[in-house]
Image 1 (cartoon, rainbow, N blue to C red):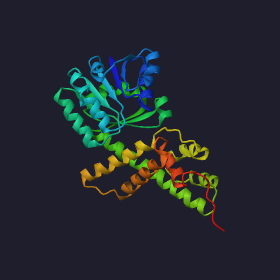
Image 2 (tube, helix red, strand yellow):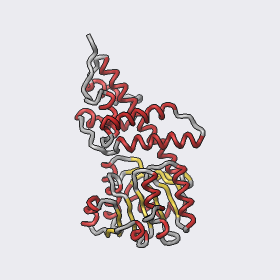
Image 3 (cartoon, one colour):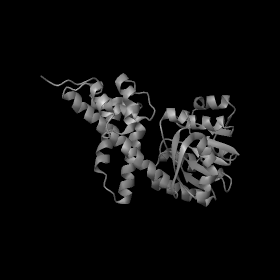
Image 4 (cartoon, rainbow, N blue to C red):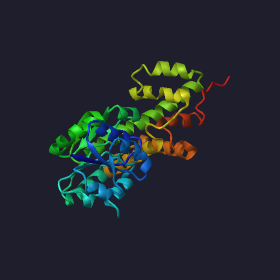
Length: 296
């Protein structure tokens, strides 16, 4: 079986590397060749366009930044979708909105291509260790066919339902991550403004059920002021926007999400766009991340 992989960013490069570690033959494409070099050094083949990649593979993974990037790669002037063999599998691991996944599924079906949406939860270190969670939407037989591949990259595979349901679950998960991180930052700002030390707040809050477990993983970044991206803030803002779009399409009201996504947008305007999404803490603290002390 030959596997294609398009999109070798923070997550995609690590996911593709884990497929290689399990001795799968890879053909890769990325807009910038340098991100593909480590995979090429270990034996992957480089395609110079998405169509040329598609012609060679049985299963194609895409891991791209946003719906427009996926659509361009699949359906653009140099798109891959019309070049996959009938009955090939396209697995989109990108974080996109459910209606977009359903649109791509319909486009794939016209060419007798089997489509699966399989976005992931997990940071870059978990991607390295092959411990991602996959939220999967698609036909049960198709999911079973790719399960061994997913288990090279993740340790939890949840078949949520039909096409578009994997991305539906990812919308819910990232809504909780984004709002939870912003609420925690605001709570820390209040605590420090009242004279509590950052250390006291961390030591006390992280052991309580009021704080989401993932926040413990962000403590080192916040305390060190080093917000090297594991999940860039700009993509969190994008996912929260897609959640609001999905809510509009579904007739659901998301007032907290809509306010919070605009806070992330303001943080982007303040220069935090490429940083880890936990940098919303730095933004909440006035961009310096320093401790607040109560006024006498």
